[in-house]
Length: 262
Image 1 (cartoon, rainbow, N blue to C red):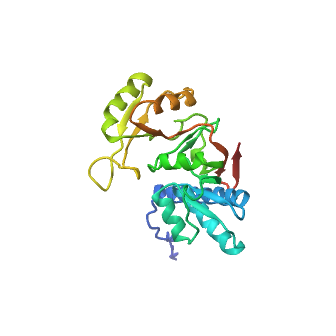
Image 2: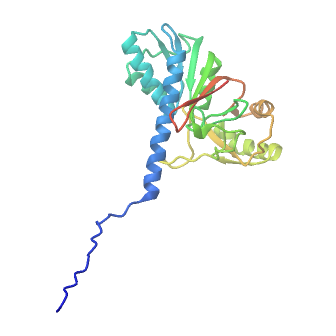
């Protein structure tokens, strides 16, 4: 007698190759954008009121703030005057059909909502990654309150903990070389002329200036004194150090909550 032996064939489903690195990156990107949005929305909802003059900052997080301002303006019929800190901010205001104004018409601003490249434990900011530091600081200085919106990657104990692109310093073009030499000699670190990506040569700001990015600086400086000393160098227009200017910071977190720092 013969016994038929049958083998149990296990057919595995065909699985296409998954790029887990790209998947993780996409998840992080989604969380980061959500973090920006929730921080921006909360700040706008808590600070923007009818009849205000608003300083509109620059950067990717501010895009969500303007979205929310436009939404509330339409739903609540708010009467607002918006003052941009850059060409990008101006385009956002125009795109959303908000009331565009300027400092000549409205020299006193109720609140300025802006982003930051990094915020330390004392709420000292690094700004200027997008090259708009001069106009951002002018508008912020005219505001009764400066409110910062950012995602969790901008929250640091000390400047330089996470943001590695350096502290921007806007300079008159003819003076960039001696300014670079003087800061490196006096304070250490390294300064590099920021170069453009889509054009040959250096980045030119909205004000026609160059930007030096200061890297590898000491992290335990008295930033108020450093800012004062650097701005006294002939040819320095402004620094990306915002010391004692922010009233409150909203950090959007990856879990959907918002951390507030005052």
